[in-house]
Image: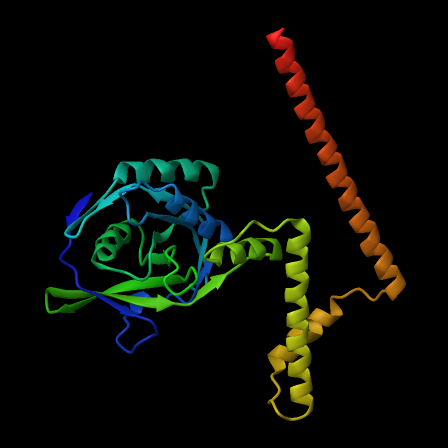
Length: 293
């Protein structure tokens, strides 16, 4: 597909009164696999490509939230006046994904970079023919503001009579859903430069520091409510009560024993895996030596 770039693009960071009913999506819920896929595709892009685009797969929840769970890159060529998308590749990849998980449908598309441009409007028009009201996800792989900003948009056309004046992109809230192990990797990914990836112990240390920080925040909030400095919130109180109730009521000594036993099991697994790697390496070298003889 090739199209000329004659679009004017308006980008809004917050909801406006002119937003039409087509931009009624509440939240874009993004799983970390999508972000990692986007970054991997950007690293593997051709040298001549300034950005990469791709298709987002997932589902639309009853409350209007778009649950984005998977993605794949789509080859394209982009210049200042036109955009060409490999439609055949897009449809072949979609058919392959549907064979594996038929419940995942097209929910939008992604691109790298900060914000949207005229080419984004053309590509969005194509995906609007694939699915109603697609999400446009942008990942700032250039770290323009010091980190990889992630934004989601929905689009509507601003027209005067039969004449289309501009494409309006309205930003919608983004909800990143990840467990602690994924969050450690995501925090490393957001940094502009890292010396090395954290190992298991360093990842556990970062998780414990985050947990301690969250506990301190809750502690300060509760003290502030008790002292009358902050108005109480029943919803927050229920969340705190549920979190406390979910903790097992164990004596400190029993809890220490459980942690130590679990740690010893993990160390044993690491030791056995190290022995296995050493044995495989030794067997490979012996096999190579035997073939040479």
